[in-house]
Length: 170
Ligand SMILES: CC(C)(COP(=O)(O)OP(=O)(O)OC[C@H]1O[C@@H](n2cnc3c(N)ncnc32)[C@H](O)[C@@H]1OP(=O)(O)O)[C@@H](O)C(=O)NCCC(=O)NCCS
Image 1 (cartoon, rainbow, N blue to C red):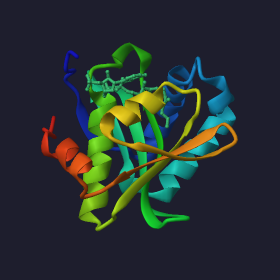
Image 2 (cartoon, rainbow, N blue to C red):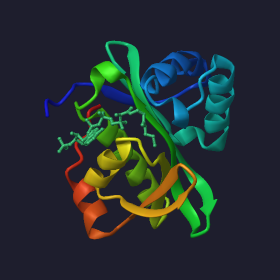
Image 3 (spheres, rainbow, N blue to C red):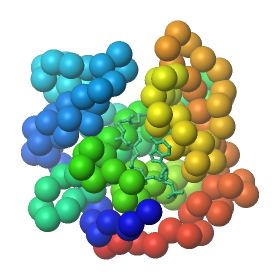
Image 4 (cartoon, rainbow, N blue to C red):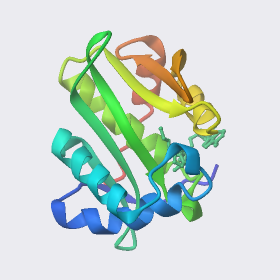
C-alpha cells in the first residue's frame, strides 16, 4: 500500500455541501446501501452532523475533501453506550492509500478518550468494506436484512495494536 499524504480536520456546517458530492461518488456502485438523491444525502449529512459534531472528521488533500468519517460517542445500542461509526467514505480515486484506516483509528482514539469500551457499525452484507473492517480487527456480529453489525472491543489487543501504530498526519 502506498501511503497517501493528507490532513484531518473536524467538519464545519459549510463543508456539508461538498460532502454530498463525495458521498454520491463514494457510493456510486453501492446503490442498495446508500441514499441516491441529493436531497436525501443532504438530510442524512445534517443528521450525522447533529449527532456528534466533534466526531465528523474530514480527510483533506490539496484543499479538497477526499474522505470523511461520522463517528458518534453518544450512541446507545443493545450493548449499552458504544462508539458508533455511522458513515465512512473515501473518494474512489484516493482509496487504498490508508485514508479510511486513519479515519477509523482517529475515531477509536476519541472513543477511548471518552471511556467507551466498544465500537459498533452497520455495513451492507455485500459491501467489500466488510473485508476492510475485518482487516482492522472488527468482528462480524448479527445481521438485520441486508445489514451486518460489526464491532471492535476498545482497549482489547486488536484495537491496541491498531492505535499503537497510529501516526498523526497533521
Ligand atoms: C471502505 C473504504 C472507506 C476504505 O477506504 P480506503 O481509504 O480505501 O481504506 P485503506 O486504504 O485505509 O485500507 C486499509 C486496509 O484495508 C484494505 N482494504 C481497503 N478496502 C478494501 C476492500 N474493499 N476489500 C479488502 N480490503 C480492503 C486495504 O488494502 C488496507 O490493507 P493493508 O493495511 O493491509 O494495506 C472505501 O473503500 C469506501 O469509501 N467505500 C465506499 C463507502 C463504504 O462502503 N463505506 C463503508 C460504510 S460502513
